[in-house]
Length: 286
Ligand code: PAJ
Image (cartoon, rainbow, N blue to C red; front, side, top):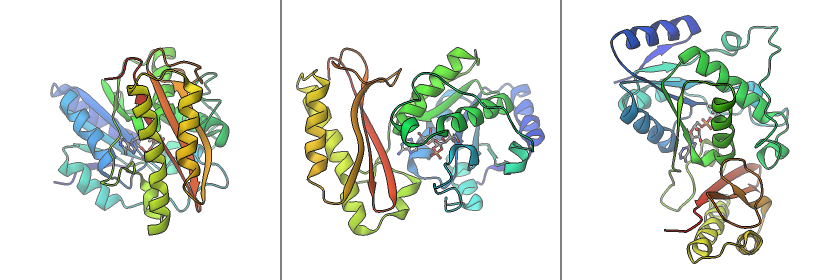
């Protein structure tokens, strides 16, 4: 069954208010659409935690740089609406850009930690755009629980911080990364890859698997794990590595030693496509 669609903030608020009156907890999964198994796994998690799940689809211009793929970003509302509905989302909130950002729109949510390096450094203004739209969506939907993907580990860390700093009464669940059969993390951008590029893209997964092996084997020296990841990545021709780093999961700051929850994070370009991936490394390993 296709989910109902709300295109305006007022319609979304009315549907959520009715669901709350009917006694449901509200779950929320924010997305930019082009739904794949990764997104749909977040809907599953939200369904476990809430009786009424809202999935938003909004390609947020604020978080794209001027040279990024905002215009080319895949959009297919009818398909997304069907997939979300089949997985049990009750409502798809799909506002237009003018609905979300009537001009003038001059407010930004800015964070001073967890966002400067890595994705923040590669994509100036990106996290301001993400946090501004997430704050807006939280205030529109007012969910009890919201689900984000570990795939975007730095975003997940920033959203956790946002909720703490601004006292949003929302439980944040971070769900593990869903991968394709060859290990490549599901991403809307995988569709841009040629067959050859896709083989190269697997290098990210191989490097992270190596990091996980070393950490599980008791290695705690972050520099050594980083060097091992770079070695794996260097074997793949025409894979342009932007970073391969060990950071703490919550603050996204580089660490010397793995002492608490840490993340091995990689970003690389294959042809024109920029890919990111990560694995969580526990201090004691399983
Ligand atoms: P988008 O890239 O559409 O991703 C929506 C959510 O799906 C994010 O929480 C992301 O981490 C998660 N996700 C993506 N690929 C995944 C995978 N392979 N496994 C598990 N989860 C995955 O992230 C955004 O949109 C935007 O920045 C948004 C938060 C919606 C704000 O505009």
